[in-house]
Length: 296
Ligand code: NAI
Image (cartoon, rainbow, N blue to C red; front, top):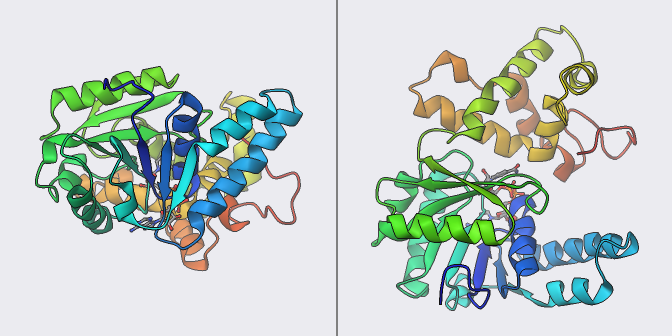
């Protein structure tokens, strides 16, 4: 079975923002997808959310009802990590925390076949470090999608020190088969996009903290004046402040606390308050009240 074979079963661990989107991408290509989340019912809820989004695509004649149903039928929420045994490729999209990712992969490795590829969607954690938890670290690779995964074309294929070239190549080919534009990256802090994007968020947050302008004004300046598709505050709300803050923290630490990458106290307060952005209904914008909040 080749890497791009749609008969390969794909497992996705973590049914949050990214996991749900990645499951959709894999199922759209024709894979059977197993979706697992540690939170009871999260995988089922993710499938229900996807069903609603597909309904709206059907209503807008972007796909047929049969296509939507077939795609949904290929996604199977499962209740246990052991249920992923048959997967040929596992993509992990759980919380951005090295120790937790290592624990999950060490457990997973005992379950899946020896030739299964283990991929992480981490935004910023060293793939080399995550792979260290494995007996066979050469089968681990970064497969970094962007949010929303079904829409954004780019996938960074990240090789850690131990990643086997054929594993990176297989994931590179697969991303291409899924309609993505794959780019090779090395396991350096933030890889490519998240490193380039750090100052975009950090300077915007500093301007906000210095009360130079409001998030809405700064976002409007960057979209209307700068030609960006989204301003930094709307984008951080979409990404999730817990995730975005964790990425900043991880890049900052990985560069030996280089002040260029210092995380924002204002963003940490949002995380402390549980104002995580769109997924919690409130971040820099209030999505429950404010119908004019920017959309992607
Ligand atoms: P999220 O918070 O929306 O979802 C994470 C999910 O993982 C939750 O449903 C949670 O219950 C589950 N989970 C946590 N620990 C688990 C465990 N031990 N086993 C199984 N499931 C577990 O997070 P999101 O945004 O989907 O991010 C996930 C990963 O993707 C992170 O590594 C993040 O850095 C990365 N990422 C995030 C992007 C974004 O824009 N949000 C973009 C690209 C990558």
